[in-house]
Length: 77
Image 1: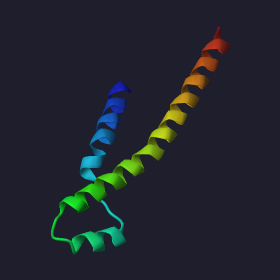
Image 2 (image 1 turned 120 degrees about the vertical axis):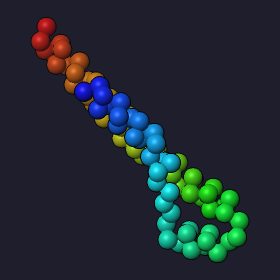
Image 3 (image 1 turned 180 degrees about the vertical axis):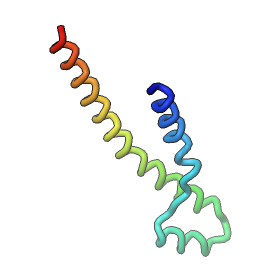
Image 4 (image 1 turned 135 degrees about the vertical axis):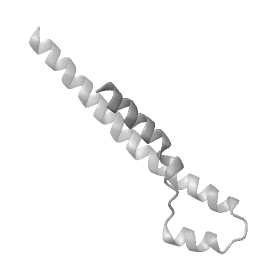
């Protein structure tokens, strides 16, 4: 179980490096520019904005897991 959890965390940490996606409008505007540093900056910004909802949902899921586990322990005692 711990191996799967650690693999999932490792995969999620590497996901921004793997996923270099942009919306079609941003891509069209930025591909016409010769300097690619702006495109990389926009791409990184999109990935950072995308990460926060997942962190919030993950935090909520962890909170629910922890409270259910605590309730189960107190029910057994």
